[in-house]
Image (cartoon, rainbow, N blue to C red; front, side, top):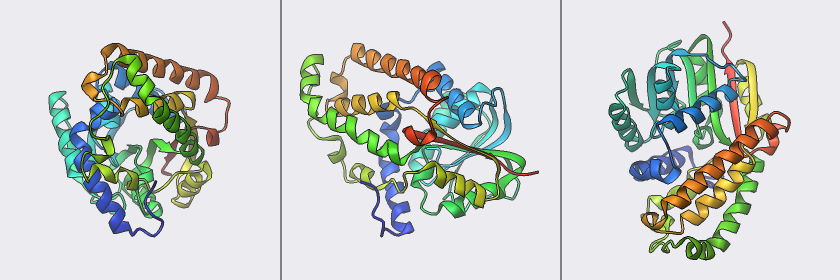
Length: 306
């Protein structure tokens, strides 16, 4: 369940910091984050969708909000879409992991700054792009945050966010999660995986905070209002992933019931390839024609007026 409606902003930020610090070292493995060709291809597609089809666009100075371990931004740096990256997060553990990955990839021009989204420590008109992946739903005061995004953007600069949960998608995800829990014992026997000795959410106190770190699930109208009230133009809110996310949550649920080292490579390859196949169906068949409200994830972009 998400954070309590009565939770203070300070409590929400504290929970997010502690949870993401605890999760930082295992985060990439848990979510299958890739910094190679596959990850780059996925991230490029997400940015193109978020920007409403501006393929081939590149940016000089980019600011990432809630960077985590760098899935979105470091892949874009590798692709040459971003020249200079300032990666921010409320969690020092996540930023430490991101910096280590950037060093391992040999990436230059990457700076990390620990900060909250609502009070960015940067001069006005410092960036050409403000971006993020699966971060807006963690931010308590979105009106203040969007005002900050606009402030630090140069005239004509863009914002682009992907991976934000929709209200319908939140409901949709509950179905494959329940199915995954019910089928997990049969799945473990079928693939020869061992039951996890300690449930993932019980491995530490800070990992158990996962249920409290989400603050919002959005209707597209919510995001359109935020963009308009912050003074952005060329506002775009789209939907992403329907079949692939339902399938992905089912896979994630059964896999989390097993000891990770007991899950075979053959299964992991099948799970990944099937997810990618459904993602292609979403991209080519469903996303161009169905309203954003129906999808699990929402994408957001807009432009700061000149």
